[in-house]
Structures are given as structure tokens and as C-alpha cells.
Length: 465
Image (cartoon, rainbow, N blue to C red; front, side):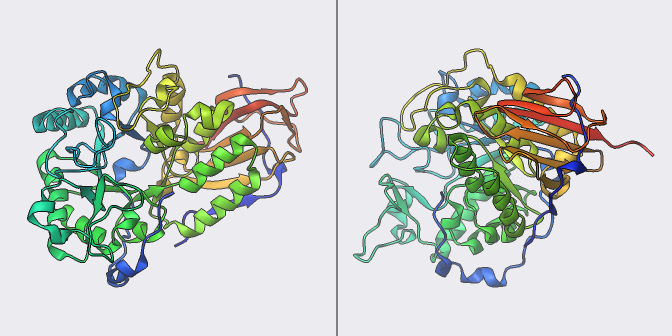
């Protein structure tokens, strides 16, 4: 299951340069015996994902209207920023029974083959997908296969589709009182779920799914589902999980939750370079070579429940975002991230994003541009080798991605204090700075002076033979 080649280079002197101007619950393995005989997925994710980013769309909070049509008006702006994949949080009708708040949770689904009337109608959604495709974007929708709302029609027509506790009662997982767990030993229920998954690919021409709590559903179900879906068209599949078996058998990408938590720890001074190095050693061994991790500094759960970017990362936010875009997998942007949205969005109520002046659009456009333009920074096995370098300063994280076209070096001050980093030799001007903040070369030209949370991205382009 070893992933990409990852080198740990001990001598900082091997680099000589100056800068030119400028938790998801674990899966119950007893539910998944059929996986042992399933063939592993061997092919790389679809080619259109090779240098892509993913943008999470919260339709309810995106505009005052909170509709598909209102969001569609934002597509030109997102295209200009460089967005590739749109992941829509659940678009389905929300259950009323045992609902939370005045509007309920997006993840309490009452009908898998309909759209939430608050957002518009089916034709509105189909037109949105068509318009996204015309703007060279791809569309994923969120899929909640583990549970339904208490007033899903299956409760009346097929109560045997639901799991029972030891008292013979239906129940919801964890403390999610607005939903009820499905019974995956029921083959008829599985068939109906797959039929619904096929429906959106066939009828709306979507390009794949982000699957909620995917590891809570048996892996062999996902194997069967993907096989059936891809009789219609090839799809991209994202699992809300860190389970490697899902990537081996059915999915193309899962979550980098552990990396996200390390970044939060770095910002608080609770983590350091050692935790980063150990994470990438482990990730290199545990993630299949063909697959991606998704890296992020925020998403809908983090924003609503654990705090805004500023609350969790503070002054470290941009430096952490640079890492998510320049490491070896796919970066996520959540709705409002490009505007430095400064509030926790209510999850069960209407609470529109604070867009203001879109202050981070230029920053994310530059990161997206580098991801698009340098093969070294492409996702997973499509991109370059990751090398992590030692430095003379443990507060500085230095790594590169070495590809066919260039080697891209990233250096980040992981502290709230000024840091000095000195190369062992002081020649050379063959690197150009593509992006930097709070970093300069001292007058002698032999050291980097990095301000708090400073970062620089430098490129050595390969010379044509």
C-alpha cells in the first residue's frame, strides 16, 4: 500500500538558493467480510482530477436567496479563480420529524431522488450542472448512505430497511437524533440505494460523489455501487473517512483529518516539524499509490462546530493554506474561504456568508495557478516526488515537489517568532520566487529572514535539453 516516494534529506546544504523579488468514526469490520474477495482499484483517478482543486458549496448559506439559480450566478467568479470541482453539500429534501433547528440538517435526507425545494427544483439543478460543465467545472454531490430522516418514505413502505437495536427499536447513530440507521444486511435496500446513486449520474450528469461517513457503510457496498454507476460514466469518488481499504477498493480520495489536526496544533504551538515528518512517513505507507488525500484548513464541520479559520489558525492561516496546495494531494476550499469569512455559519438555520470584498481571491488564485501550471504540484501519482529537508532551524519546515517540469520548494516558518535559516553555501540565483510573505534575504545574501508564519514558494525550472 506504499504511496509516493518520499525522501527525507538530511543535509540542508544540498539546497543552494536565493529568492528573486518578488474524526470520523472507525468502520465495523464485521460488516464487511465480502471485501476480502473484491478486486482492488488499480487505475489512477480520472485525468481531469490530476491538477484539480475541490470547492465545497453550501447552497443554503451562499446567497440571500439560498438557491441553485442564485449560486449559478457565481460560476464566472469561481471559474476566474480557477475552481475545478464543485462539491455540493446535500441537495435533497430535509426531514421534518425530529428535525434540528428551524431548517434541519442537510444530512437528514427524506428523499434520495428529489431536490430540496428551498434550493429550487430538479430542472434548476440540472441546468446548474450543465452550466458548471460549460465553465469547465465538474460536479460532485454529497451522498448520505448510512442513515435517512425519520420521515423518509422507506419508514412506511419498507421498515425492514432500518437497523434495530437490542430492544428491537430503530435508532440513530451517535447523538444524531434527527436520523435513523439503515440495515446493510438487507439486499433490497442496497439495490434501492444503488439505484438512487445511478439516478443522479444518469439524469443530472453529475461527475461523482462525496460520501458522508463512508466508513460506516460496508466497503463491499461501495464496491458494488461504483461498479454499477460506472456502467453509465466514469466517476470520481470521495470518502469522508481515513480508512485505506476504501481507497483500495472503491474510492479515489479520502480525508486528511490527521494532517488538519496537526495544522491546528502547529498554530497553537502544540505541534512541530517532527509531527509533520512522522505524518508523511505514515501517510506514505498507508495510502495506496493511486489515491489522493484531501487537505483543508476548513470545511462545513470545522467552521460550524470547531471554529473559523481565524479562531483555530489565527496568523498561521495563510501558511497552512500554502501547505494544503503544495503538498502531494488535492486541496479543498470551503464556501467563503476566499472571502476570509469570519463567522461560524449556523448549521440548522439561515446564516449567509460574509463576502465583503473577497479579500483572499488573489491569494487562492495564485495557489490554484501554481497547482495547475507546475506538474510537480499535481495531485498524487500525477505529480512530483515529495522531499522533506532538514534545516538548521527546527521551527522551519522545508520541502520540495520534484516533477518533470520543475522542482518547487516551499519553506514555512511554523512559529509566531522571527526565524533565520542559513544555507551551508551562498551562491546561486537559479530559483525564482513564485509566492512569498514575510520573508526576505539578508543583505549578505546568505540567510532567509522569516517573520512570524512567513512562507516562500520557489521554483527551479528544468532546463530544456
